[in-house]
Image 1 (cartoon, one colour):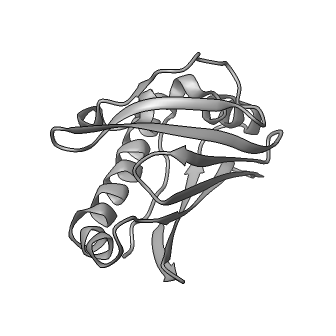
Image 2 (image 1 turned 90 degrees about the vertical axis):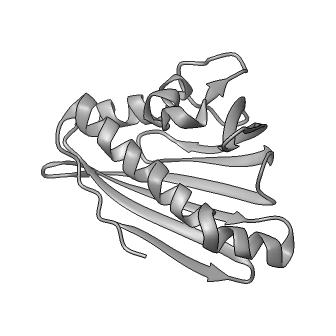
Amino acid sequence: MITFRKHSGIYTLETRTELPLGLVEAWDFFSSPKNLQKITPPHMGFEITSRNEEKAYSGQIISYNVGILPGIRTSWVTEITHVEDKKVFVDEQRFGPYSMWHHEHHFEKTADGVKMLDRVSFKIPFGPLGYLAYDLFIKKQLIGIFEYRTLKLDELFGKTTLKTTS
């Protein structure tokens, strides 16, 4: 399920994904920066430009180049600010296309695999123009990114579950 809400000029996106994986396997895959490119839509031209570490750790800086619109590429730098092994890690934008980006990745073992919760709080620059851009294409683009991720996870690991609501 993908949900959005707005509060104090900040948007929060939440997704819940059921993965047919063990907790260790899910954690190892998602906490490794090298796997980001595998689950990002190809049209975004996502490329990690920093050293490619095997595991996320607190204080880690990761830099990327990514296409945010057709023909428009930007640098994006995030920091892994919190890691609790096999439970949660957080990445925050330091430089990039958003005024603010805070992405929490939560993992919980279930009887059938792993429930993963992504909570992304973000602020769009440019005031009213940014809000218009959100309504016109940013929200749709974010939904597309998470839907693509689910398709890739299906290919890699078997049937995953993600429901989309607006």
